[in-house]
Length: 84
Image (tube, rainbow, N blue to C red; front, side):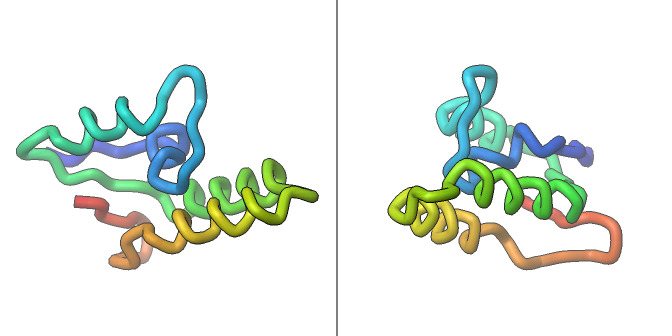
């Protein structure tokens, strides 16, 4: 079964957390079996902009978030990216 993930569910993969969804929640989600996780490339662009906004004038945070962002899977299709 395929499960489409919105930006908020991808953010922990880039080191970004919210009060509604964090790294521990992501670990539980990504352990689900029998699912293919799909994300829009637009969500990846949105995350990049969030990183830029949140780390403005914070070079240490900027470098940390950029490193985590680079760990995203690079297996892209024309309209979606499979995460698992």
